[in-house]
Image (cartoon, helix red, strand yellow):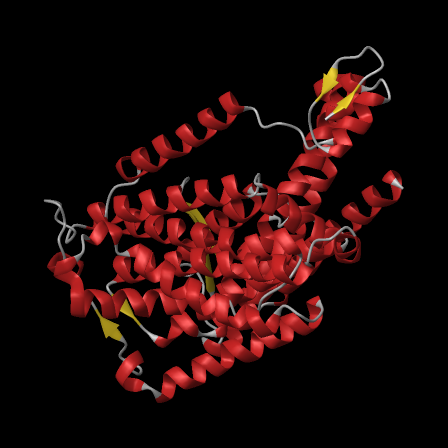
Amino acid sequence: MSTMNSGQPVVGTPVQQSLASSGNAERWHAFLPPRPNRARSISCWGSALIAAIALPFIFPGTLGISVLTQICIAVTFALAFNMLLGGTGMLSFGHALYFGTGAYATAHFLNYFGEAVPVVLVPLVGGLAALLIGAFIALFTVRSGKVIFAMISLAVGQLAYSAATIMTGWSGGDEGIRLDPTQAAGWGIDFGSPLAVYFLVAAWAWLAALAMHTFTRTPLGRLMNATRDNAERMNFVGFDPVMIRGLALTLSAGFAGIAGALYALAFQVVTLDTLSIAQSTNGMLHTYIGGHTTFLGPVVGAVLITVISAHLSALTDAWSLYLGIFFVAIVVSMRRGLTGWLADLSRTGARVYRKGGAKCVVKQAAPGLFGGIAVCAGFIMAIEMTRSLLEGMGAPVGVSFGSVGTGFELDPHQATYWIFAALLFGAGVGIICKRHKKRN
């Protein structure tokens, strides 16, 4: 405790005491992170909960509930992935290890001890199992740099996948391990219904997201961000970056295990795919596309990619190619992901609107919008006609617009369609380049 010039005692940290003693007591809050708006936070989380409850009634049916369930699982896993990437700047290529551990732990626990524990608490088993695995792996993976950590995580993840293919008694091999949530104590709830399973998954996804968001505002969450920005300075002021990164990896693994447990309960079968590199890639895609610099970014990426994958896969076999190109375009042109790009776009639009009104906003946005549509249309036409020549023996490609009931066919044997696709693509690229030159 120290005393100001006026003789009043000052209580607080040394930084606060120093600022107060120098006559700047009213300004020391500027050196601290902004305080969260509790009313806004409560309204946002309440709105998210209400939306999760209402969505299965807005999109009823087997497909709608299945997609919503996949979204909840993808959001939980993406947020867990970003706890490590966005929190400490460490990229993991082996996060499927924790996802798969949570899924397999849940399956085996339900099969052997299902009647002892209510099914609504079973995700804790998957989270705890993954938490222990993450704590063990953190002992020898977080001591090196970020690039080395990424390589070690890839090696450990592939090692676990290879071990699972050999240990068929534990993993079930290609057939996987089946489980039945209805055999566990359900507190009077029939979890044989897809709607009941969705509500269980959605409730856990909401709780996990709330816990991870709350964690970002704790002292440890702030230390993780500081370690990400400058680990050497953190070490200089007395905090161990290795310990902070290890705790971040452990907690991230635990939440990823909860996502794996939700996967097991939702699909009632756990296969080797939960441990594969493809699962880790999904988390990375969702995080980078949505934006790893904000908490909402992975949520946006998970929702968008899950919906696109569910519907685009029914339209074309080349959907994975489009998804990969979309990811490359986001990483190259939008370094902060879609959420960062939308934030910049909204600020730019507001500034243009203040200067010239709505007409000026439309004038500025129209070239980029039409150019992007032309590039996408020309590229998709070329890809679909090429796929038809390679796989479909040159059969015409049907293009329909379900909302208006019209459509047409692209014949890959006619040069007119190829020329039209090339003109569309070239015109779009030209419009975008011209707009970019004007801005610079």
